Image (cartoon, rainbow, N blue to C red):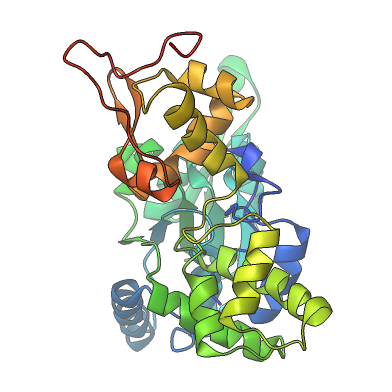
Length: 360
C-alpha cells in the first residue's frame, strides 16, 4: 500500500502508540515493507501526483539523465517513503535513505553525498529538521553537484571543492512551511500528498487483505475505511486489528458487523475518533459548554499535556469540522454536539458560552 515505513519520530511524539496514530512503530514497518507497491501503476490514490511524477520520470529516462530533485509534502502515513522507493525503481537506480534529524552537522551530509553513485536516489525524510549548516551545503550539492569541504580551523582553514556525481534528492516533509525558500526553490518537482477518500482507502484495504490472506467483504472494507482518518497506514493497522478479532471471535472473515465490533473494542468510533479525541470533545462540551476555552485549560481538563492536545488530537478534530480554533480559544461546532449525541445549551442574551468553575 501507500505509506511510509521509515519515518523518524515526528514533532508530535505523543502520537506513538495510538491505534489511529499516523506514525509507524516496529510492527507497522515490518508489515508495510511486505505490502509496499513497487511501481506507480500499483500505487493507490494520489492520482494527480502519480500522473505528474510519471511524466517527470519518463522524460528523464528519455533524455538519459537523472530525474529532477523531488519534494514530497503531506501528513505522515500517506506514502512519501513509498514514492521515493518507486522513483528509484522506475529510474533503475539504487536508493539511500536517511532523515533530517540524523544530519546534525555539515560533515554528516558531506559523508553521505560523497559516497553516492551516479544516478542514485537520496531520500531525506523530515528534511525540515536538518541543521542549518547542512542545509546550506545542500544548496550547492543540489544545484552544482559540488560541495566545499572545509579543512582546518581559523585563518588557516581552506575549502576543498569536491565534485559529486549527478543524483536525485527526494525530500519529504510534514511541514513544508518550515523549509527555507532557497531550499524549496531548488526542487524541480514539488508535490503535496492529500488525504485519501473512502473509495481509495477501500482499494488499499482490499489489496492489503489479499496480500495478508485475509477474507474481507465490501461492507467490511468500507467500515474500516470510514474509520481510517484518510490515511492508508491507519487503514492497514485497523485491518490487522480487525483480522485478529475475526480470527478469535468469528470464523476469520471480516464483515461490517465484525469490523464494527472489533473497532468498538479498540475504542475507535465511526468517524475514526479514539479515546483522546472524544475526551477532548467531551471536556469542551460538558465542562465548558462548547467554549471558547483556552488550550491550557482544555489540556488540564483532559489530563494531557498541552502539546499532546494541540499536535495530536486537534488537527484531526479541526479537519473533521468538530472543533474550531479562534482568537478567544477552542470552540466546538454543531457537528461535535451531534456526534456525541448532546444538545447545545440554550444561552440567554448575557450568556458567555462557558460554564463557571463549579458548573453554575
